[in-house]
Image (cartoon, rainbow, N blue to C red; front, top):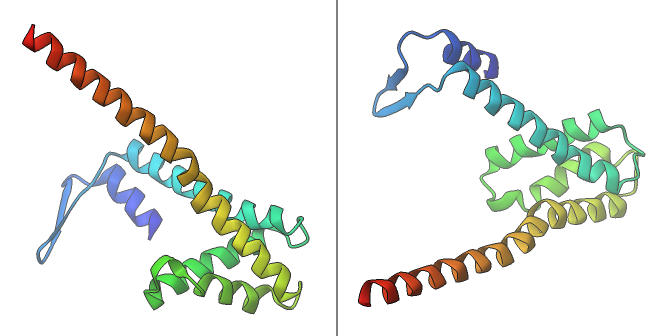
Length: 146
């Protein structure tokens, strides 16, 4: 599917595809390649976090495959945030290699690292950005009224 998308983005003469009421505007080949690289890097990171949490005792490729399978299972089940589905897939696929409690601990650490750590870093940055915008707005109002 990804190769079809990349090929369409690179070679399609029509840049807009329409099915029924849906329209897809194709980006250029360079942007599509960048999207594919960013997506691939994201998945490598997604697998690297639990792989590190498990001390490398299961090879990275196996952890990557498990995380991809868990993502597909999450899409199929429509469970918000893949809660429980990720953990069930990891225990089902890797439970023969490591104890379930270690796998579940690694998944909790994964969720904290992948989801909560960026949030914790973004909140102060957002607050600083909002404070700067308010200061600029007040300065602009003072300038306009003088």
